[in-house]
Amino acid sequence: MICSNANSITGFWNGSKHPTAIQPPWAIGDQTSFPLIRKLFEMGRPLGQQTNRKLLRDFRLYMLVGGMPQAVHEYIETINFRKVDAVKRDILALYESDFMKIDTSGRASMLFDVIPAQL
Image (tube, rainbow, N blue to C red; front, top):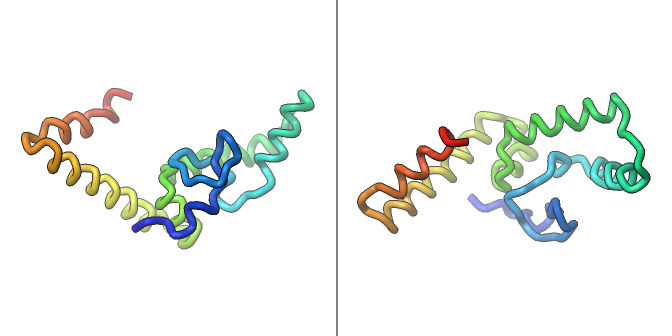
């Protein structure tokens, strides 16, 4: 499944309208946090406890969803972590399938599988 509105999600680092795997937490429906953070940063002012707690909660949610555009889209549409997990597992299965097309020995797939243990 490809996210049909991937182009509508604003890129994190440059503010462009390009789909990217690096989605900020506020891409999950919050359109005001990033401009606020940018403005406060430019002014050299702190966020404040309440705003900081909200953004950290949003960041944890973002990490749980996984940051893949399709997973973010699924979360926005359903707010269902099981469906989000299914999307992520489908993406990983596609990666595994692609590795087998490139390297039939399975070595590339094994390397991919051990990446999480190395982080």
